[in-house]
Image (cartoon, rainbow, N blue to C red; front, side):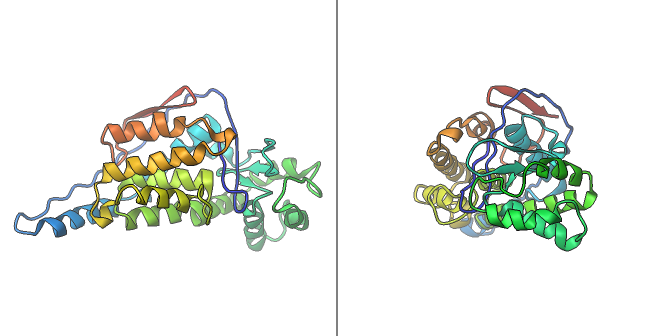
Amino acid sequence: MRSRSIARTATRVTLGLALLAVPATAVAATTTAPAHRAAAPAHAAAHAARAAVGLDDPAKKEIAMQLVSSAENSSLDWKAQYQYIEDIGDGRGYTGGIIGFTSGTHDMLELVELYTKRKPDNVLAGYLPALRKVDGGDSHSGLDPNYPKDWRKAAKDPDFRKAQDDERDRVYFNPAVKQGKADGIGVLGQFAYYDAIVMHGDGDDKTSFSGIRKRALAKAKPPAQGGDEKTYLNAFLDARVWAMKQEEAHSDTSRVDTEQRVFLKQGNLDLHTPLAWKVYGDDYHID
Protein backbone atom coordinates (compact mmCIF):
# COMPACT_ATOMS: atom_id res chain seq x y z
CA MET A 1 0.00 0.00 0.00
CA ARG A 2 1.96 2.97 -1.21
CA SER A 3 1.31 6.70 -1.21
CA ARG A 4 3.94 9.24 -1.94
CA SER A 5 3.25 12.91 -2.47
CA ILE A 6 1.53 13.56 -5.81
CA ALA A 7 3.97 16.42 -6.26
CA ARG A 8 6.89 14.08 -6.48
CA THR A 9 6.47 10.34 -6.52
CA ALA A 10 4.26 7.25 -6.40
CA THR A 11 1.41 5.22 -4.92
CA ARG A 12 0.58 1.57 -5.01
CA VAL A 13 -2.26 -0.24 -3.30
CA THR A 14 -1.70 -3.98 -3.37
CA LEU A 15 -3.47 -6.49 -1.17
CA GLY A 16 -3.23 -10.25 -1.28
CA LEU A 17 -1.89 -13.32 0.41
CA ALA A 18 1.65 -14.58 0.18
CA LEU A 19 4.05 -16.18 2.60
CA LEU A 20 7.64 -16.57 1.54
CA ALA A 21 10.67 -17.26 3.66
CA VAL A 22 14.00 -15.97 2.40
CA PRO A 23 17.08 -16.52 4.60
CA ALA A 24 19.05 -13.42 5.44
CA THR A 25 22.36 -13.02 7.18
CA ALA A 26 22.36 -10.99 10.34
CA VAL A 27 25.16 -8.52 10.88
CA ALA A 28 25.89 -7.27 14.38
CA ALA A 29 27.88 -4.33 15.64
CA THR A 30 29.00 -3.81 19.24
CA THR A 31 30.96 -1.06 20.85
CA THR A 32 32.49 -0.63 24.26
CA ALA A 33 33.36 2.84 25.48
CA PRO A 34 36.52 3.18 27.60
CA ALA A 35 35.62 3.71 31.25
CA HIS A 36 37.76 6.83 31.55
CA ARG A 37 35.90 8.73 28.85
CA ALA A 38 33.27 11.29 29.73
CA ALA A 39 29.66 10.09 29.52
CA ALA A 40 28.53 12.43 26.75
CA PRO A 41 31.41 11.70 24.32
CA ALA A 42 31.06 7.96 25.04
CA HIS A 43 27.35 8.17 24.30
CA ALA A 44 27.98 9.93 21.00
CA ALA A 45 30.79 7.55 20.05
CA ALA A 46 28.62 4.51 20.70
CA HIS A 47 25.84 5.79 18.46
CA ALA A 48 28.31 6.76 15.75
CA ALA A 49 29.77 3.25 15.80
CA ARG A 50 26.31 1.64 15.67
CA ALA A 51 25.24 3.83 12.78
CA ALA A 52 28.41 2.87 10.90
CA VAL A 53 26.89 -0.58 10.29
CA GLY A 54 23.78 0.60 8.56
CA LEU A 55 20.93 -0.44 6.36
CA ASP A 56 23.31 -0.18 3.41
CA ASP A 57 25.13 -3.29 4.60
CA PRO A 58 24.25 -5.85 1.86
CA ALA A 59 22.55 -8.32 4.23
CA LYS A 60 20.56 -5.57 5.93
CA LYS A 61 19.58 -4.01 2.61
CA GLU A 62 18.19 -7.36 1.45
CA ILE A 63 16.08 -7.49 4.61
CA ALA A 64 14.83 -3.96 3.92
CA MET A 65 13.79 -4.89 0.38
CA GLN A 66 11.85 -7.89 1.68
CA LEU A 67 10.15 -5.92 4.45
CA VAL A 68 8.98 -3.24 2.02
CA SER A 69 7.84 -5.85 -0.49
CA SER A 70 5.74 -7.59 2.16
CA ALA A 71 3.75 -4.36 2.52
CA GLU A 72 3.83 -3.25 -1.12
CA ASN A 73 3.39 -6.58 -2.88
CA SER A 74 2.24 -9.10 -0.25
CA SER A 75 5.40 -11.07 -0.99
CA LEU A 76 9.01 -11.19 0.12
CA ASP A 77 10.09 -11.77 -3.46
CA TRP A 78 10.88 -8.15 -4.28
CA LYS A 79 12.87 -9.08 -7.38
CA ALA A 80 9.68 -10.36 -9.01
CA GLN A 81 8.34 -6.79 -9.05
CA TYR A 82 10.52 -5.31 -11.82
CA GLN A 83 7.79 -6.28 -14.31
CA TYR A 84 4.87 -5.09 -12.19
CA ILE A 85 2.69 -2.37 -13.74
CA GLU A 86 -0.95 -1.33 -13.41
CA ASP A 87 -3.20 1.65 -12.83
CA ILE A 88 -4.68 1.21 -9.37
CA GLY A 89 -7.04 4.16 -9.71
CA ASP A 90 -5.27 6.43 -7.24
CA GLY A 91 -4.94 9.44 -9.50
CA ARG A 92 -1.27 8.84 -10.22
CA GLY A 93 -1.55 7.00 -13.53
CA TYR A 94 0.47 3.85 -14.03
CA THR A 95 2.39 2.38 -11.09
CA GLY A 96 5.26 0.05 -11.91
CA GLY A 97 8.47 -1.60 -10.80
CA ILE A 98 10.20 -2.44 -7.54
CA ILE A 99 9.44 0.84 -5.81
CA GLY A 100 6.19 1.89 -7.43
CA PHE A 101 7.41 4.44 -9.95
CA THR A 102 4.36 6.28 -11.30
CA SER A 103 3.60 8.05 -14.54
CA GLY A 104 1.82 10.86 -12.73
CA THR A 105 4.48 11.77 -10.18
CA HIS A 106 7.68 12.22 -12.17
CA ASP A 107 9.79 9.30 -10.94
CA MET A 108 8.66 6.94 -13.71
CA LEU A 109 9.66 9.58 -16.24
CA GLU A 110 13.08 9.94 -14.61
CA LEU A 111 13.50 6.16 -14.65
CA VAL A 112 12.74 5.83 -18.36
CA GLU A 113 14.98 8.82 -19.10
CA LEU A 114 17.85 7.14 -17.26
CA TYR A 115 17.24 3.84 -19.05
CA THR A 116 17.17 5.62 -22.40
CA LYS A 117 20.32 7.59 -21.63
CA ARG A 118 22.11 4.33 -20.96
CA LYS A 119 20.42 2.37 -23.73
CA PRO A 120 18.86 4.67 -26.36
CA ASP A 121 17.38 1.88 -28.46
CA ASN A 122 15.01 0.42 -25.85
CA VAL A 123 11.35 -0.53 -26.02
CA LEU A 124 10.24 2.31 -23.70
CA ALA A 125 12.17 5.16 -25.31
CA GLY A 126 9.34 6.00 -27.69
CA TYR A 127 7.03 6.70 -24.76
CA LEU A 128 9.11 9.56 -23.36
CA PRO A 129 7.07 12.33 -25.07
CA ALA A 130 3.86 10.83 -23.66
CA LEU A 131 5.37 10.38 -20.19
CA ARG A 132 6.36 14.04 -20.14
CA LYS A 133 2.81 15.07 -21.09
CA VAL A 134 1.06 12.92 -18.48
CA ASP A 135 3.50 13.80 -15.68
CA GLY A 136 1.47 15.34 -12.86
CA GLY A 137 -1.82 13.62 -13.61
CA ASP A 138 -3.54 10.30 -14.16
CA SER A 139 -3.87 10.36 -17.95
CA HIS A 140 -2.79 7.42 -20.13
CA SER A 141 -2.69 9.58 -23.24
CA GLY A 142 -0.03 8.30 -25.60
CA LEU A 143 0.67 5.28 -23.39
CA ASP A 144 -2.23 2.96 -24.13
CA PRO A 145 -2.65 0.28 -25.20
CA ASN A 146 0.89 -1.11 -25.35
CA TYR A 147 2.81 0.61 -22.56
CA PRO A 148 2.17 -2.07 -19.89
CA LYS A 149 3.15 -4.84 -22.31
CA ASP A 150 6.32 -3.01 -23.29
CA TRP A 151 7.16 -2.28 -19.64
CA ARG A 152 7.02 -6.01 -18.89
CA LYS A 153 9.18 -6.65 -21.94
CA ALA A 154 11.72 -4.08 -20.75
CA ALA A 155 11.79 -5.75 -17.33
CA LYS A 156 13.47 -8.75 -18.92
CA ASP A 157 16.43 -6.51 -19.78
CA PRO A 158 19.14 -6.44 -17.07
CA ASP A 159 19.83 -2.80 -18.00
CA PHE A 160 16.27 -1.80 -17.12
CA ARG A 161 16.38 -3.71 -13.86
CA LYS A 162 19.66 -1.99 -13.03
CA ALA A 163 18.08 1.39 -13.81
CA GLN A 164 15.25 0.60 -11.39
CA ASP A 165 17.77 -0.35 -8.70
CA ASP A 166 19.76 2.81 -9.24
CA GLU A 167 16.76 5.15 -9.16
CA ARG A 168 15.41 3.44 -6.04
CA ASP A 169 18.74 4.03 -4.34
CA ARG A 170 19.23 7.58 -5.58
CA VAL A 171 15.77 8.89 -4.75
CA TYR A 172 14.71 6.82 -1.74
CA PHE A 173 17.17 4.41 -0.18
CA ASN A 174 20.37 6.46 -0.03
CA PRO A 175 18.74 9.66 1.31
CA ALA A 176 16.96 7.67 4.03
CA VAL A 177 20.14 5.90 5.15
CA LYS A 178 22.18 9.11 5.04
CA GLN A 179 19.67 10.98 7.20
CA GLY A 180 19.35 8.03 9.56
CA LYS A 181 23.09 7.86 10.11
CA ALA A 182 23.24 11.62 10.63
CA ASP A 183 20.54 11.27 13.30
CA GLY A 184 22.52 8.51 15.00
CA ILE A 185 19.86 5.83 14.62
CA GLY A 186 20.57 2.19 13.87
CA VAL A 187 19.37 -0.18 11.18
CA LEU A 188 15.74 -0.29 12.33
CA GLY A 189 15.52 3.49 12.43
CA GLN A 190 17.10 3.79 9.00
CA PHE A 191 14.56 1.30 7.72
CA ALA A 192 11.73 3.30 9.29
CA TYR A 193 13.03 6.32 7.37
CA TYR A 194 13.27 4.34 4.14
CA ASP A 195 9.78 2.88 4.42
CA ALA A 196 8.42 6.36 5.10
CA ILE A 197 10.11 7.96 2.11
CA VAL A 198 8.95 5.08 -0.11
CA MET A 199 5.34 5.69 0.86
CA HIS A 200 5.27 9.46 1.31
CA GLY A 201 8.13 10.77 -0.80
CA ASP A 202 9.93 13.89 0.32
CA GLY A 203 9.09 17.54 0.01
CA ASP A 204 7.76 20.51 1.93
CA ASP A 205 4.30 19.20 2.84
CA LYS A 206 3.54 17.89 6.34
CA THR A 207 2.95 14.32 5.19
CA SER A 208 6.25 14.01 3.31
CA PHE A 209 9.23 12.26 4.90
CA SER A 210 10.73 15.59 5.96
CA GLY A 211 7.39 16.67 7.40
CA ILE A 212 7.10 13.43 9.37
CA ARG A 213 10.64 13.78 10.71
CA LYS A 214 9.99 17.41 11.68
CA ARG A 215 6.88 16.32 13.57
CA ALA A 216 8.92 13.68 15.42
CA LEU A 217 11.69 16.15 16.27
CA ALA A 218 9.12 18.35 17.98
CA LYS A 219 8.47 15.49 20.40
CA ALA A 220 11.87 13.88 20.92
CA LYS A 221 15.57 14.25 20.14
CA PRO A 222 17.44 11.67 18.05
CA PRO A 223 20.61 10.08 19.47
CA ALA A 224 22.83 12.48 17.52
CA GLN A 225 21.29 15.28 19.60
CA GLY A 226 21.64 13.38 22.87
CA GLY A 227 18.22 11.74 22.84
CA ASP A 228 17.18 8.17 23.53
CA GLU A 229 16.90 6.08 20.37
CA LYS A 230 13.75 4.15 21.34
CA THR A 231 11.97 7.30 22.49
CA TYR A 232 12.82 9.09 19.28
CA LEU A 233 11.80 6.17 17.06
CA ASN A 234 8.47 5.90 18.86
CA ALA A 235 7.93 9.60 18.15
CA PHE A 236 8.83 9.09 14.50
CA LEU A 237 6.47 6.13 14.14
CA ASP A 238 3.69 8.13 15.84
CA ALA A 239 4.25 10.90 13.29
CA ARG A 240 4.28 8.35 10.47
CA VAL A 241 0.95 6.90 11.59
CA TRP A 242 -0.52 10.41 11.68
CA ALA A 243 0.67 11.03 8.11
CA MET A 244 -0.77 7.74 6.88
CA LYS A 245 -4.17 8.52 8.34
CA GLN A 246 -4.38 11.76 6.38
CA GLU A 247 -5.29 9.73 3.28
CA GLU A 248 -8.02 7.10 3.36
CA ALA A 249 -6.12 4.74 1.06
CA HIS A 250 -3.34 4.48 3.64
CA SER A 251 -5.35 4.41 6.84
CA ASP A 252 -4.29 0.81 7.47
CA THR A 253 -1.16 1.38 9.56
CA SER A 254 -0.20 -2.26 10.09
CA ARG A 255 3.17 -1.83 8.36
CA VAL A 256 4.02 0.32 11.36
CA ASP A 257 1.88 -1.24 14.11
CA THR A 258 2.54 -4.94 13.49
CA GLU A 259 5.92 -4.65 11.82
CA GLN A 260 8.20 -1.76 12.75
CA ARG A 261 6.68 -1.17 16.18
CA VAL A 262 7.05 -4.88 16.97
CA PHE A 263 10.78 -4.80 16.25
CA LEU A 264 11.13 -1.63 18.32
CA LYS A 265 9.33 -3.13 21.33
CA GLN A 266 11.63 -6.14 21.07
CA GLY A 267 14.62 -3.81 21.22
CA ASN A 268 15.81 -5.14 17.86
CA LEU A 269 17.35 -1.86 16.78
CA ASP A 270 19.66 -3.51 14.25
CA LEU A 271 17.13 -5.88 12.66
CA HIS A 272 18.87 -9.06 13.68
CA THR A 273 17.25 -12.19 12.27
CA PRO A 274 15.07 -14.15 12.75
CA LEU A 275 12.28 -11.65 12.14
CA ALA A 276 8.54 -12.27 12.32
CA TRP A 277 5.82 -9.72 11.58
CA LYS A 278 2.38 -9.13 10.10
CA VAL A 279 1.22 -6.76 7.37
CA TYR A 280 -2.49 -6.37 6.59
CA GLY A 281 -3.11 -9.49 8.67
CA ASP A 282 -0.67 -11.73 6.77
CA ASP A 283 2.25 -13.41 8.53
CA TYR A 284 5.83 -13.17 7.29
CA HIS A 285 9.20 -14.25 8.57
CA ILE A 286 12.86 -14.10 7.67
CA ASP A 287 15.06 -16.77 9.23
